Image (cartoon, rainbow, N blue to C red; front, side, top):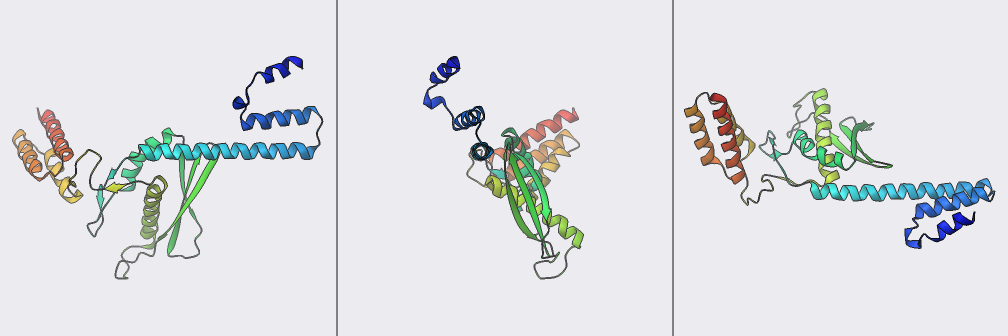
Length: 242
């Protein structure tokens, strides 16, 4: 007993964590035959401290994720011509970052009293702490003018996809736009212009055709990043044709 007390005395107060203090109080209560009420109260404090530490670690990890998540370029376009980052684009970019920090994301649906709405739910868990995010998305299948533009099944699936994409944006505070974080000040090409130019290079059947498609794409490019991508595609296609 004396040696144990001497060992404890050598520990400075700064080195004694709140969890360690609670643990010592619990051990002391058991050793001294404390009543069940006292033991339960100490255990409740221990559980609260564990939950608090898990919450703090969750917040710190989220901050690190957001610091590592850079600007995400739009890779898709709506029927109205408005560009956006698809769920696949967001997932490809964000998943490696949040998984490295120990986060797991689980999507589900909740019962929604309004049949024309889908409530998409995302549970974000890390260790002993989790947070639940929800979003209600219209799923009536109606177009801008009020007419039916898709079946109920299609509308439901579309609403779930929209909800997952919007929730990912909100959870990690993602910035989406036309330009990447490469130092270029000009906005890049929209997807309807960029994709055919790239396809022309990748699908060229002769060396001369590759060169022609590359020159055409180079003239249309608006950023240094796009020029580099077109050049890389042209070099790759030429290597395939050799």
